[in-house]
Length: 207
Ligand SMILES: [Zn+2]
Image (cartoon, rainbow, N blue to C red):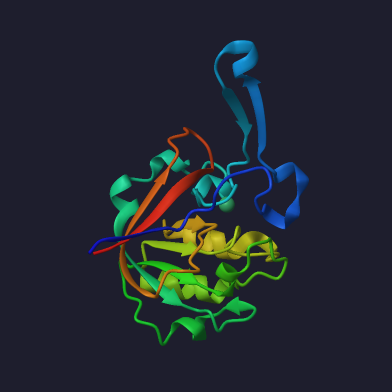
């Protein structure tokens, strides 16, 4: 039987946003409504790193590729959900070395972040040495269950190491109910052109 996990965050004005910053909060404005216009129309003001989203190299690299450069064939693919729920601070190389990760994998890291409904200022992040390990292995993509893949790392090394190897970064996943294992990943970023990130609906299919 096919099982579908929606691992995206619902988007609404009270959702968790990065470091609880007010300016990151989605703004919903009803521009027309039934009593006056006979229809409902809503405009949303949305930071492109809201909720579940895909980062493109342009986020960290001047003249880097925008999110439209990703091919859907790289975002609709097999993937591995890996259990890192015992990590308390940062995922490091030694946390990954015993896991079955090989070249070409698209890996999603399930951490204790997936248990927190609110923004956790001490969220588990991916340390630079772990990013370097994944780059050496030659993974295709990394999905992470926090609004950032790193927190306050000077120079944004984790992003830069992954982007230098054209590794796709998905942030803001919700993996709470998902058992570790192999799935089909469907990650569809909004087709916004020339920008450094795009919100995405991300699904896991288990056959
Ligand atoms: Zn981002």
